Image: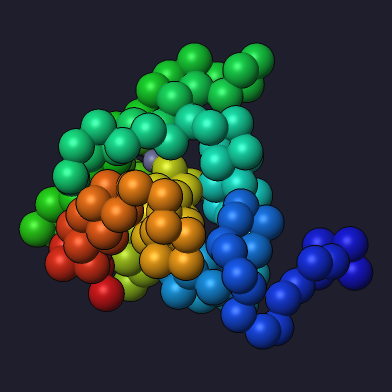
Length: 147
Ligand SMILES: [Zn+2]
């Protein structure tokens, strides 16, 4: 049961890296479909502070120390969130060629969605002067995400 420890069934006062998977819609979906490898990686990126917002529609995922050396760029486009990592682009090709029905995603995109979710939720519950950043971040996601 280790993984289920700390499950909050009632709405938490603040959202953080440990409870975001139970609340962020995309992460909830991944969790119920058993794709927890993506969630595990996304959690690592958040814990290590790898996700940095560059502008309204661009984020970077910095390398995890002693784990990899590449910085990936995640952008919000008319096609939804895209990432320049190999895994995402392979899945995107398969999706475009009709070989796969699954909308492409990757751990970097999951991490960005969680990052924005936490920012947005905590901006509403904790007034700390970061309203604009959080809301803008969520607005750009909401408008352009796949689903
Ligand atoms: Zn990626």
